[in-house]
Length: 286
Length: 301
Image 1 (cartoon, helix red, strand yellow):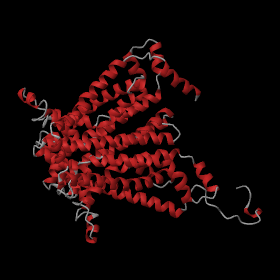
Image 2 (spheres, chains in turn green, brown):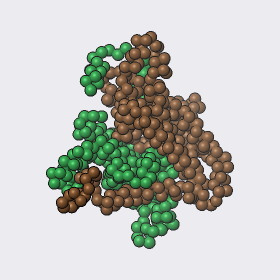
Image 3 (spheres, rainbow over the protein chains, first blue to last red):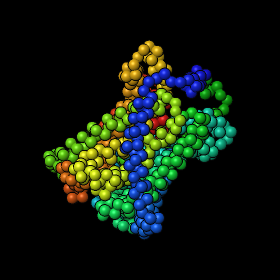
Image 4 (cartoon, rainbow over the protein chains, first blue to last red):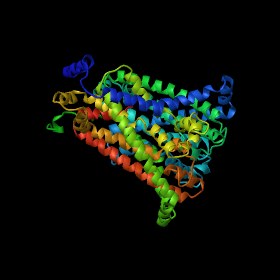
């Protein structure tokens, strides 16, 4: 450990002898600016051509407000569902052994790897009136496809791995001695979970929730097939941007985009703060 | 185990392990987790293949005999073949600068590299339309010089590069930070040039992490839908990638064909997961605790 510390110290105090710093950093900054920063700033410059009143009018039109409410609301519900079941899945994968566990562990990342359009048409196929699940649900009065509930289903799918993959490593590193101590002090299993385990994994759980939420807010491909896309009811904000673009309403599309970008950046900031909190909680080890 | 129960004067009630749940709780939790995964992952995945083969094997392969389907596959491969190497070079350069040197603003740079992940795919396409589109900043100039970017290959590549931008870099940065600079410094002392150091010392150390990033980058590049949809223009046989071709077939009620092309993308996703799992196991077995730390870092971010 002291060697590690000494090396860390020497890194900071000594000038590096390695070559290529200027080239590598220069290329990084150039590429980052050309691909990401300048194009993103275009959205803000485009919006600046609108007067403030026109901007406010564009983003507070009833149809736009309804799409924001759906995008953010459905993302919130989906992230909450994923927080609950993601914790359960992480727990089961870390604590128990059962047949097929390794395969299931690997498949949890499927939403990261499966193209969103494929997920979208597959979910629509199974939740539509004639689908495997739709034909069980619809006679009972539960319509999923082509309703806001369908939007939630698609967003649960895309956000599924985030909570599992943030909570899982924290649970793996969790010191079982703490649970034994709690138990020997007379705590019930539920009390131990609630008072000892949950506080430790809470930062990771909240981070996973925020990541799933951030992803779901901007999601497009998996949603548009199952949503039905009815204005005011099941039309998400990214689709409204798309619709306005197709009508050549560039300013209107960009105004919505800027609101979503600002929301994403605030979320990114929150997530960074959460991860900093999580690292401090787990004793400073990264 | 060595003492027989008979030697104990009275039977001690068998206590459950202090840190375990009862079998009932355990199996309820497993059933809940697996039920949820089945509902949201396994059933949709199975549905892709079921719908693809519903009309028979002939209908399945007929979907790929279409020239438009063939063109979409070719375009998807071409776009990935440009976008992935571009982000690979960037990822290595960024990780070299960030992991091997100290400079101010490093954390800000890392955050900026991650930025594309928090931008909606539709907005990722929109920003390029605002620059290169007919009404965009460079639109009139491009039209004058007869250069097509939006509704053509360059726009699709740009949008794909944007959405897959962080994959390689975010994989390599924590890995190379954990490895430190000692080996490279030793190579400098022994008189190696910069490229020699990279090819002979750094690259062998980061090859698995690099491959990991490339695989994830490639899966997203081939599967991207929203961003590409904005800049593609949906010209059949020309600017339709595979996911866009799936959308068009689906909207034309050619479900069997749509799911057939979709099944190819699903196979790509499964191969991606298999390779990813293989690399994760490989790096863990390589016993380098450094590598394992980096993989966990990936998982937690």
